[in-house]
Length: 576
Image (cartoon, rainbow, N blue to C red; front, side, top):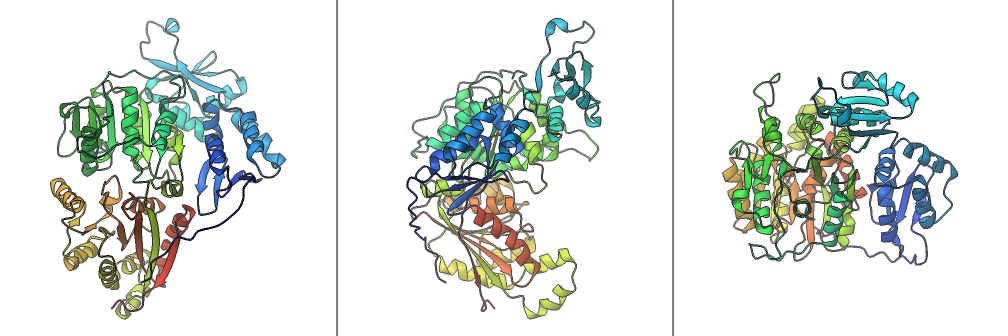
């Protein structure tokens, strides 16, 4: 099997402006121009990155991106001036007026604390005020059915309960009215925490420029509209470091939510290794252990658990157990619906979301935006790869035939069963063996969706298997043995998609997945992106040819190529 090689592109664009502004509000950034990076930094405050392949990156100006810019103090004229300064061609005239119209909506509705002197003696509940000077807008908001139970009419707007702060903001942004939230944050209990210059593990630790920039973009000036938001960075680029840096800047009690117990343990290990926190200052709150300390790390699963579908969520009380000054949502795109609910109540606490991708297959990105905060920092994966901070990934799809004895069952199966038959193609087992044999120097993850398939592969490869049923202590033991190179191959289910630190993994073989999920593809690729000595990573996807699996693979391929990764397709005929 031939290895892919990196192609060098020689393009002379010195002296040329990097930006092309199009009438559909997309911005094309020519990455080969001398001022491409300067241009990218200039447009990030008001444009969202959509695609970042090799030569031209695509950004889009959206209402949310413009409101985010307005919340940072930018005006429509600032946006226009930036586009004029960096655009290669004339700006299409029709879009400029649209910027002013959209951005003018930000600030029409302000959320503030209620003036104490106007409180009645009979109403001691802490409430907020929606101040709306425009009477027409007041009438429009007053007629929204979704808000009637949350709002009480006042002379200059509406009052609302502190607990409804997030819910009201989310409903209003859905109807095109972003709220300028000036209600204060609670201070939280003080906690002295600093980053170490020398890690306890003996590993070298130096903050990277982009990590410092990301943290500062969230903290802001400390005034209204700052102190919360989302940082989007590729897996392996140090999102946890950004979280710890922000903790050291705010110096307050912190609640950290993450995806599973293994991730809880990794957060605790990193905090002990790289900060001045003592072990007794950090607690684990999970299905295994339920303790609380100034820094508490908790799983989403335990927070969203309840004894029956109509019952209360007993562990929501954790959010009120201590005077938290910061809540960190690791893998924020994974927030389950119950956590959205409690997050809506936590708008008085500073919030940080960390993720490699804001894509949600359920389309609920607006909930993340309105309840956790706007995106404060984002950088293309390929930019960090080119700078050597993450490994270069070579992505290959290998197509295999279905065995003859499965073709009739496949043809007569339901759509869902067709996918499973194709995903569990037994010829994939020989392909996995061959790939492992071809990459004897690599630390390899074999990743799949279906437990029957994974159990068979684990037996065949004589490799340890991690699934949702694997006890946490056993998971930790396997992860340690992999890190220590005592085992070279491990088989993992989708539980390893998120928040697992396996820095030595340099190759992944994906035998089945979740119907072409872009989110899953980003996370699985991220398992192997930490830079190695050779700075190369291999990502193989095994697909049954001429089946529905090809169609779902095309969705994954589109996502990876839009992120700038080379994606090749090979057809293997001899895996029998």
